Image 1: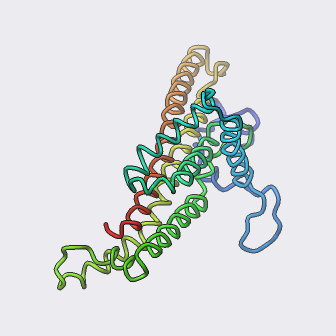
Image 2: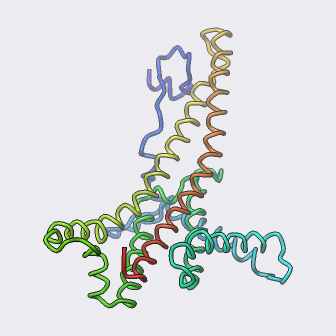
Image 3: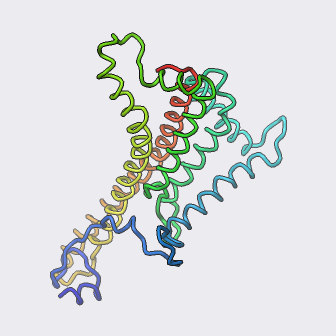
Length: 282
């Protein structure tokens, strides 16, 4: 039965008994293209390839929009300038004041790079349609980079003692309560914060890509116009498949918006954390 299903293709209203098999988490654990046999490494995987493409896309964006920068900007230069102004006015200035301008290049670069990694799940490259950020290692490394920068900025500005005090001893808390509050603050600021910073981006992109895959697989499964069970059911299958296609297209547009929002949120939180470190207060 299963061999017949695999040969003929599994669709709705079939007579060989196979049902819908939704995509699973195996999507996010691709086999390596090249395994070097080095312990602790995955070799050359799909994630490595799409990460490289995302890096090229983000670098290409800046190259083609700023290579011929002029006083009267071109369309590409205007787009780049609008993005820089948006990050400056909506993120760095709001969280760090004018001092945030020195972190502006980092935040803009991070936004473009994260968005490029996210949209790899929508670019129809055969065999490579996968958001890079669905690998937990990528958001984790970005979050750890921000975490190190947060601690470094705080220590440079306020010293080790001042940085720790600002994030372990909340102002206005009665001293007897510090024995309870300080461990909670330590857990929240120094352990949970980098974890949630990475997990938020990973989880949203993981769920979104899996849902898109389910829509695509469902559309294929329900398309069976030549079913041996009759023309009427064949027409019904086409209608079902069309609904799945509409859902896929609608959710694709929504997912593109979510990809931009997640890049924005990650950069916003990064700016907030660094701003807190520079100010030396919650």
